[in-house]
Image 1 (spheres, one colour):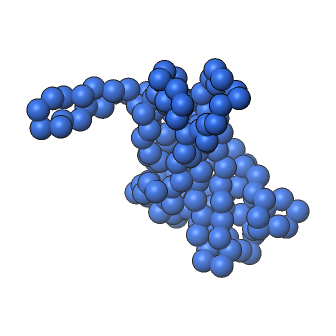
Image 2 (image 1 turned 180 degrees about the vertical axis):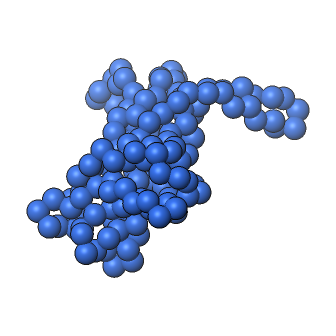
Length: 146
């Protein structure tokens, strides 16, 4: 689970970083990963909210078992559930943006408003195993608050 710091309105908040390539369990070939979509979730009992980013890649053998890449789930400070308005809101520095609203008054199915979007950038990271440096490409995901 990723954790980000609050930011000003009209800003980008880092959600997480994932390897840019995904290798299915029964495959020997890694494939490029991309964002398939995102949605918000809320817990009315606690007033908490989070964003979930789903990933996809080009499937070569559709008949093989493949659970797919794990989603990134992030609770971001300032992102909360408002029970009075049935909305997920992001608040920072006195400014509030509605990210999602409950459909038909239900707390379980949320619809994105476009006030908060998820975007991705690509980059490179390096890890050091104590002897060698390993370079790899990554996808950084961001919550953009408008």
